[in-house]
Amino acid sequence: QKMWAPLCSYTHAGGLHIQRRISDTEIIQNYSDEEMIEMLEISNLLALYSATEISVLTHSKEVGNTIFAAYSAIPKRPEIISQSYNG
Image: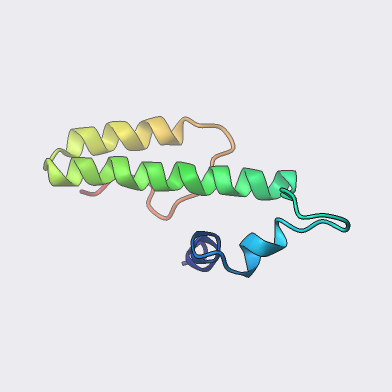
């Protein structure tokens, strides 16, 4: 939920996208380090969700647990709701 509005804004050239392209004197990439880290974290979560969905589609709880364990081993990762895979 928290990520939906910002992702829609970037995807559909909304206000966030425009704000990040305007500096005081020109139109250029204007992302802060924090914003780039946030987008990388969101991308990682989307990759996790996509990979986990593969385990759901293949009815493989073992694959889901392996993916979740690999994600859990990443230091300083964003927290996710579930503490284990329940597919």
